[in-house]
Length: 632
Image (cartoon, rainbow, N blue to C red; front, side, top):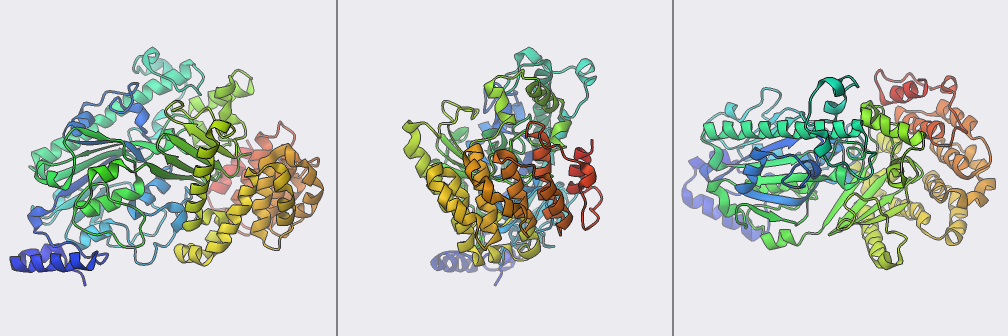
């Protein structure tokens, strides 16, 4: 039974006490039932999100960042979270994680852009729904970008006109979200003439990451983004001023954070700290400081992540989150500073971004970062049309092709290691992989095991492929995952054969390549490609997989043949493209076509005239982006 708080004024005071004691004795509240508080005891909550902004661009978090007086003022009256993380490094996946409080690969929302909306888990709604049920006025101005189907009760208003000022009464508490695109990646899509005509911050004063070439283009791009951050600060200042003018500042929690990392190359879209580590400051209002267990102007290095944000808002509002979510509150009643300070783990994921596929999972524990690249032969630099609109991206690639980059600057364009371990205290830019260092063998093993436990316990739906999820799972993704939990665990084990010494992996891979289960064959071939030329002894048994009935298995055999084999696999790829039955399947195949075309030393250029489909691609689809690129 729901007890909407906006009716509490009609109940006698003693009834509220009885209701609360009853709820506490039960251990937790029903998902949509709010703790009974009087209206005046409920805080307002405002989120201010800047797009594509990691901690590396604000002086409050990084000495090389921009000065932001309004953001720094929030910190003086609140709490700075030095270790806050988006779980995904791109908009739709990060934002859907925020709004659902669920890990994306568990509920089928991990692909950007979505090919199909996922249904929310049974018994779970996007968290503002619970605020509305408790009497809050919920507004969003105005970006949503969700990968899951939104129910009608999430927002009172989600539009460019949305405002807390439109709530029904001055006493109605509100939750308001404002997103600024000032810092979005698109702000760096300038042309060469802009570098000569538009003045920016002193380019010699900016600090470039060590994996970038030190060029005028990179310095101008970095300086221009520095100025964008200062413009974001004005949005924060104006929002705070509106609340103050309305007399609401002392009743309102204000969260300022980036919606994921960015935005220079190797950040947005990539699961490094530059793509995941976001700024977070929470201003705590005078009237509700009893809901925090910290002094003002304090900082914490306890880890918080996007799945925690929605549950934290609910907790501040006195509402228990529903069962079936993954987050833990980091503010509000029952949350202690010592417990939050002790949190030392965050989980990250990167899947398809627009037309570019990859499968990366990350685990950070304290100062150590573990990255599992499940498709390491696909370089980070694999073409994404939107990324390469940026001049810095284009110049970086040109310099690599001209042989003008050093080893660190070249990493982005070369195959990745299947697993990487970084000590962020000594290597904050993740450029020195310690996975092969005997000194860190125990740390590597522990984090590898922990990540595998997390992937299997979810379970991680990406191991079933996007095309499979599109056809069979997105109407009930969580139920599908539970039904196939054991099978997904076995697929993860097959993929992880890539981490064994070759002499141990080879007999197991031979057996897996011959499996009756096409997904086992699929992941066995991925593991083979991860070994590269070391797996050349399997070349003779790949021929039958190039004739496989499953187009995606053929695709994986094509990759292996191109990497470690002795034959030209393009005819098998063209044939599979003609047999693909969905855009998701065909798009995955075209990812391999681009890999062959761009990253096999010119041995396998793709003839776009031979790319045929059983169906007509949708206008402006990711599939057309790929074919247009190959036809350039």
